[in-house]
Length: 75
Image (cartoon, rainbow, N blue to C red):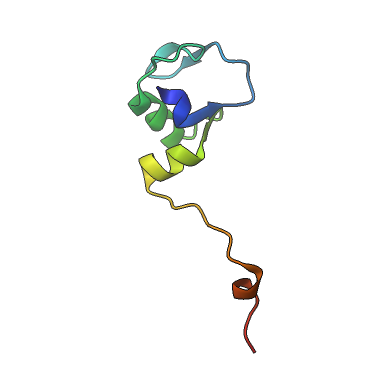
């Protein structure tokens, strides 16, 4: 399910004509993740990664907040 890894932004979810893939209906949940990943990598302006997408597809570890004591520089 592509919606776990990507958010559709700037437009209402629906049909969009995409070069090399033709018409894709983003209101459907069965779009292959590989197609969404390819579009995202090519700069498709209507897809945004979710936190799960960042970690599972690209291996990006989200920053965890440190306690205030560890964030301040020691003198």
